[in-house]
Image 1 (cartoon, each protein chain N blue to C red):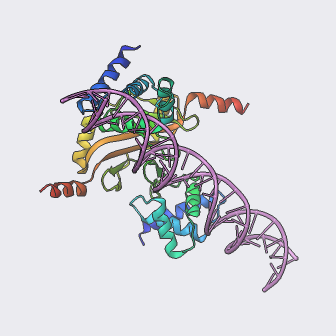
Image 2 (cartoon, rainbow over the protein chains, first blue to last red; image 1 turned 90 degrees about the vertical axis):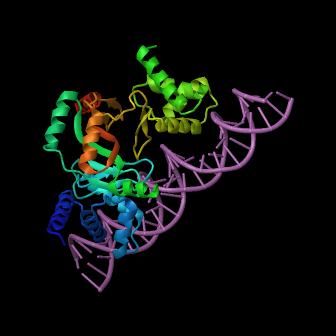
Image 3 (tube, helix red, strand yellow; image 1 turned 180 degrees about the vertical axis):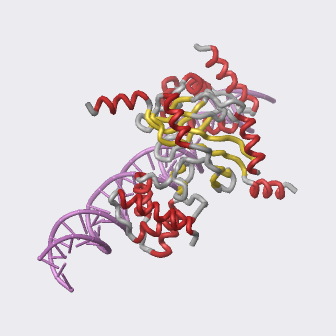
Length: 153
Length: 153
DNA sequence: AGTCAATTTTGGAATCATTCCAGACGTTTA
DNA sequence: TAAACGTCTGGAATGATTCCAAAATTGACT
């Protein structure tokens, strides 16, 4: 396993432990699933993954664990109204994404430099106490563009 | 009525007419509601507003009209998974918002310069064909900060 | 190991925004 | 007036998320 993935899992574990939350087997599997999946999985995908090891796992447990991770600032939730939310457990800090309107893939973009400085500056400017931001770009990924081009031949 | 509001209503009307969509009385009221409300109303608020004039109006009609406006690029939809979507009919182009996590108010921020240039440049860089972006800042508005400060006295 | 208390998990029901649909209604055109 | 078409209604269907009470698991202590 990638050492970065391992490090990320440890980070999540410690963050939870610091809040007095125990790492049960299901929770641990879920951390692994989150750390090793860069496709921004939905709750259902995480559920399926954890179930491979613990088939009795219920959806409620997945939602539960997500709540714990949110409270510990260890997961980024991308909300959608029409479809299921998607989650980024690899980089819990706000960062921009490329979202394909056709295949619903979600890709990370590089972090803009000094993200928290930016929020701090904006907080001063606006009078808000800002805690996070969402920046996402919507369009059509290279693969989907090819497919529509091919289909119109 | 503000002349900017009036101009915006005309803009929406024309955009719909250009797509061969007729402006019914309910639709027209909804355009007015959208153009004159800067608080980013939800579907329920729009429904209530249109109902003041046409009490038999159904929710489905509101959803319908929103669909028409989206297709005509005349409304900006802010998606939320936990609560109702919010709509900006005054500035249909992508622009950033300040969102209060406590009172759920949504405020417009000034548009970054040359927004479409920015998308064009990013499209080149990423290979995506980007059509819109979402940039929102989440935090606590000045009013809500005061209230929690006062409550802790 | 055995018991108790506390935490976690389950599974199903409840909630709520949104979408769907068939029938009713209105408007336009001839 | 009638036919044709688009619009609107009201209620049902859908689907993600939340809630909850009961069952299962865990950890501490004996």
